[in-house]
Image 1 (cartoon, rainbow, N blue to C red):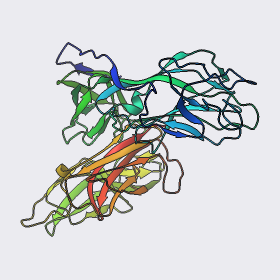
Image 2 (tube, rainbow, N blue to C red):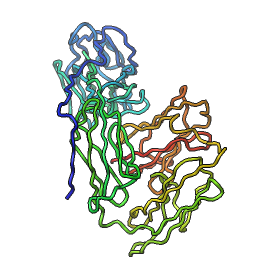
Image 3 (cartoon, rainbow, N blue to C red):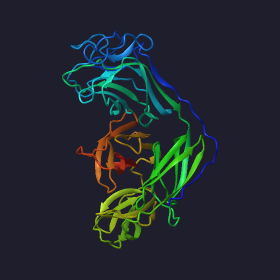
Image 4 (spheres, rainbow, N blue to C red):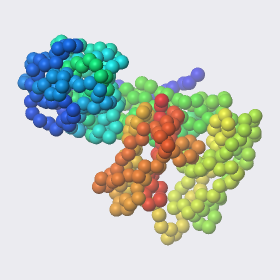
Length: 470
């Protein structure tokens, strides 16, 4: 049974009250992108002659609303048209900066009429990458026939929290070839959130059976991730205050989830994470050795594991917790390293899964006059959000260097197989890509941990981990 100990260094919790981040009553033009028959105007009670109810005859507040065919456009006056494509009619908000807020909510008043989803569709969608990708947060599950204004509230925190380029989209489509309804009418829209206050989570990751530290275990939180060091210690900084959780997926251990971690303002919450060994994990390779030769090259060797009934397929070689390569023999050469400290371990890959890691072996590379041919990690940042994620995550990086030619993000699975490569177009010294969980051929990949690398001109600059949960 897992024994979890949480020590709180403070006993008070800072309570936050939601405040307005952005609002629009549609009395002035604020930069909405309108397509199809979406308009910002005064409603005139049009549509609904044959099916559903008409538009309102007045706004909820003020004079104007955002709506579909408010003034009598197209063949079906006041109604949306037939045979629309997916999201063909849309209204997209300007970018909303939620980068200093958590618990973000979408609130508005609505008057909506749409046929049942076997035929017609209305949607609310949210983007956190300036409209590049969209996540549908609502669609009609039945026919909707409003004849009065009502208030709608949606929690969009998982998408919008701490993001600077949030957009809201209302849309109509697909529609079939028969009945038409009056569609969307929206007024008094606002985005609210709690001003973010930060704390930190630190802890140790240990083996539940013997208390030994677990090195290079990936620790993941919605707002950041890290890896335990050689002594099993970790710290997650800049975590919003409130009730948080972490997940840990370490080789050879049952996945670990710690909930109800109370993060408090400008303080650190300690968590002891005791991971339970997975009894079904096959045995690791034996007797890992590492030796340095020719100054900055490392020769790794190991011995076969005590083979179980499963078929041994390959070995995974890890450096500083990041997988380097899958190999078939019991040796590996890590070449042309820059000056620094390196820790290695090896796992065995069977037809039944991956083994426990070997003990770590450590080397120190120091060659006088050796030039570092990569950008130091301190000069760049690399992260993804959300993490864990489903179905999409945005990988972002910033660089403090002029060397930004041929910039790529490469994604690998736990076996070291390359999943996808993105060419990145920089905006100044920053860049980002959105990964939708598809490989290079457009097929969905399975749930699990994936590695991503920032590569510039063929040289790896930084690496990190992320988790896809389907």
